[in-house]
Length: 338
Ligand code: ASP
Image (cartoon, rainbow, N blue to C red; front, side):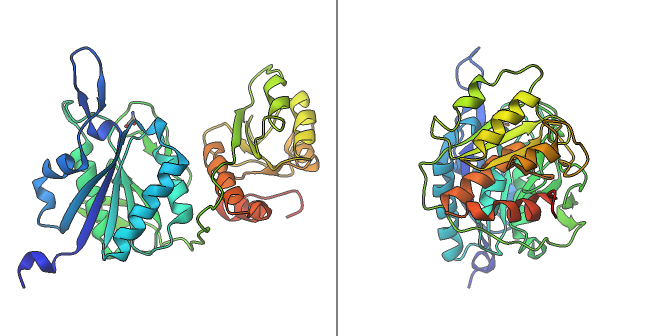
């Protein structure tokens, strides 16, 4: 048997993003153009590590990815594992990396690592970080210690859990953080060094319904209730609010949310960017105690965007009744009565 046949098998699926962007016509800005195969070819260092193949699944800026496309990606990744892959790497844009990673993490049933990466600098920019991130992602995906950790985001020599990671800077190279908990691990001299034991994972079934919609609205100073009042009538089946501070809204919004939560699940997260919602601290109208009494659920540490992903998946598999428990597990959320 040749040495190459003894190497583990790894697949790279590319979805687009800055990591594969370059200038196609002068003065027009960068656009996704490099295929997965071209990304792989640009990194000869990868060849000795595994039998690697690459496929271009999409060539999109990550803002245009959809849940339905992600379910196709999930199925593709699942097939790769069934066919013997020891690790799966996805490259994509960083703008929605945290949401995509969390979506896939909720549904990834395997111990085999699913590693997502991207880049802050485009492929033709000086100091492009894409190749280094891709190499690190492959190293993480091939490490035995990465098994059983679900979907991981590898970027800037850090490994983040899908549940905690957040893009916290629009353009900086060190754009990703896992606030409070910190990264799961670090890349040191080409090896992953985990700082934490794997979290106990509990995945959800793949959604069967795909036509439902979940709205996400952010509370803001002196906002009217016109849009809010329309949400249920427009056919949305769930609503997430990015609330002020520890999960608060104005008294007008609170009144509206009370009406809405008679018809669909309402989750209140914090728009603060870090930290948790409260459960029993504030007693004013629009505070978390009032909102829970009106039927809303508090998100805990789960950010508004990930709450929307969770609610969409739960509704899609007919498990809305699980919402409160999932928020407790995923967001470490407390409720008034817990
Ligand atoms: N700026 C983005 C990126 O980092 C664009 C995108 O998300 O596709 O890739």
